[in-house]
Image (spheres, rainbow, N blue to C red):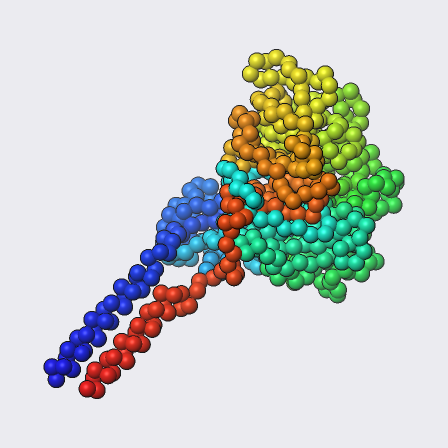
Length: 632
């Protein structure tokens, strides 16, 4: 009996050690992440806040973001009426109109799920998202595991080029990762769920598969291609950037088609095609038709840009906005079940109508109105009410000598209901034209200069851009209030008057545009690396001083490695591409140091966690010993 008691005491002692084994096996894990609230404005702008606890959703939201959220009654339910003034809106007036308002989502450790719109429901714990979307099935892209995202050309529906993330403080070499393909990577690179999305233009002059454009999804952790889908052989260079909408990625093409793919699998969901054409990928109810107007006199004579197809597309207030190279502005909805549906379209007056090519519409809010601005290859700029497609104003742009310009190349929104308009003679570069600051409410000009720049980025009261200078040009130095020589290079300038804060001279041309992130400005050379110091470089410049933080030459390259790429700055990385057919991942991690894993984990391992396995083995041994001790 005494021996049996001793054995049982030994077994009990071993049982007491089990929790210690479990605790020790978890000691190396990361500390728990505090619950947080995501505010997703549905246009590329997202914000995370640590949650301030409350007994109801309303109490939690109020404690976390304060008076920014306004609550009230909708159809007998207490709900979120607005956040930062963004409130319920119905886009369009016809049968395909749709309403967008704030919805509440909960994180189930794997994905966002629609929770409710009723803020009186109890809140206990967990990650919550406020999403401004038209449907419960459209869920936020940013999530607790991968908060940093870049979902459209230059980041958002206003193509601001402002990243809330951070880039690398220094660059490790060899680069973290480079991936190459037949063809060219001319479009900007998107980033979501830790995955990279980008298009590859079909290789010029090739036949077969190499001639087809494709959309790729990459896993940069394991450096592998997750999926790839071919979608076009338009005969044009595919330079438009996709846009991510929830779990979909929308791709536009020079063949006048638009495609919706599941961004996790690459499966085709829907297709938009010109009337009378079959779908390349989708048939039946998944295929929607629209009517191009290529023969209209105001655009039919532009044989260069008429076949450009669809521009970059932006997503705002639950709708897709884009231009087509027949000079029309279009607004469509997208739904997994219903596909693409036209909400409205607008044809500008023939005096200002021209082909839209590549550059997207810009969406912005000012003084209670949601504006859409877009420029064309007729030298025209069109401003519409984005909600119903009605004209606010439209006009042709002239230079400082009152000559009509050939192209409105870019529009960048500034504070106070203003926008910077870059124009040129029609080239796809900063080699001609100038820049003007206009009032978005009526199109009037605040100032205009013969500063030939391309796609600036605005942050606060400054803007940053590359300037291509001619001889004998001058610019006002804001520090000395004197005119100084204008030289080619990067500049920091004041929005209010266009005067210079700083300059960083370089003979390396850049046309892709600049991006702002965490006090730094990023850009990429247009010329290939074969041009020596004047090509193939990605720049990181201090936004306050103009000093070069770092400059990185991307490799591999050849004499055709030109780049129209606007850098993507996200999650401590800079992502770029070029005509070599490569994408480059630039970070503080050397490619030699990268260690891949078998797969990216998107959910908890649960009982497969090593600590649980060890615990269960020990419990089994202890129970066996207990049985043996009892039988003796």
